[in-house]
Amino acid sequence: MVKRSWRIAAPAIVAASALVMSGCGGGGGSSSSGGTQTITFWDTNANAQQSQAWKQVIAAFETANPKIKVKYVSFPIAQSQQKLDTAIASGATPDVALLSTSLIADVAGQNALIPLDDDYAKSSVNGHINSKLVQLVRDSGPGGKLYELPQTTNAAIIWYRTDWFQQKSLQPPTSWDNFYKAASTLTDAGSNKFGFTIRGGAGSIAQVMDAIYAQSGITTFWGPDGKTTINDPKNVAALQKIAALYKKDTPSADVNNDYLKMTAEFDGGSIGMMQHNLGSYPDHLKGLGAGKFAGLTMPPSPSGNYNLVAGWTGGLGVFKSTKHRDAAWKFTEFTSGQQGDTIWNKIVGQIPTNTDSQGEAWVQQNASLAQAIKVLAMPNTTIVNPPTYLPEYSSITKSESEPLWQKVLLGQMTSQQFLDTLAQKLNDAQAKYKSRK
Image 1 (cartoon, rainbow, N blue to C red):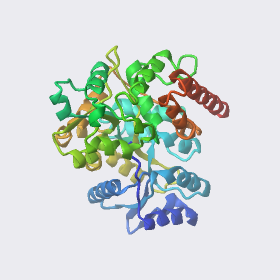
Image 2: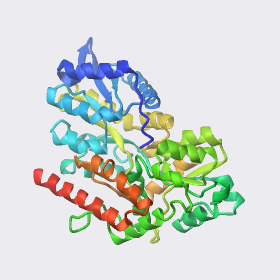
Image 3: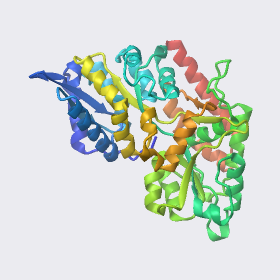
């Protein structure tokens, strides 16, 4: 998703903790009074901007549904899994919660969520939510069921300096050939200008996956033999090309780059292209100003198909403990309906999953967002779904692999060795996961 600088006021965290620790049932604070139902909604991915968006969605929902009130509880994403697991164990789950595809397997696997397939089939939003994202959610949880109604998603983006490209008469990075040509042409190390900034530090592996699957054209994370495709020869070749940019067309300091350092370089005027996602847009607009940059989804593979590694896809899930199932579903449906989906995504700057929202004027005013939505809808676009459901996935792709990626950049490890090591860990984790099912 967007950069992880989640912040939330201490009272909200205390409120969430108190809610879990109180042991209250009935959906973590559901109540009825005078014909009015109150449902509790947990925002598990809170920051200032997104909290503002949810409060506006809730206000619109309550206006349209005066007999339903929504109690908003928020905490940052770093606490989400622990909060949810504790709530399930203590019987103090909310009525509804924002879930990401990476959380579905854990929460649904504890038998805490209601499958929403029948609700969606009868819903007014049926057929108005991007079908690829609906399938992505089904693939992310047990039994292929719909445990979350998609409400927002993100996409990997190559941001580039339009003014630099114009000065050098370069074509935008709409192909990998254009990308590598621009990285070389824009580099002038003597003037401290580089064509690209590579992410070598925290958060790097997700961007590695975005780049290699987009280039290779491999459409599935698991092959027919049940083994990961991450170390397929095509992915290895793609990674070799990306790694070869380091210190040639990137600054040498990039080996330690996280999001903030990359953005400082790009917005500071020393970088021609950087890879991140749609969430970078406000920072670039503030740092560079309108008209000096643009963003495109990762270029298609040589075969012409777009391979997008699944970005952060979020939506609401309904908990089995709720005493107000109909009200909980109504709120869930509203957030993915055109009005609710538009309110939230317009504020946050991400992709609405509702296809009616995607066609609104505000989307077209953000060219990068509009292009990402267009690519997502193309028949030759495939979403590659990494196994975020694996309990070990986070540690494998962060603390265990980020130092190894730095070794690749420094020439201390080959791309083949790196991807073979990563593949072995993922295959082992997958085998362990299947043995428990």
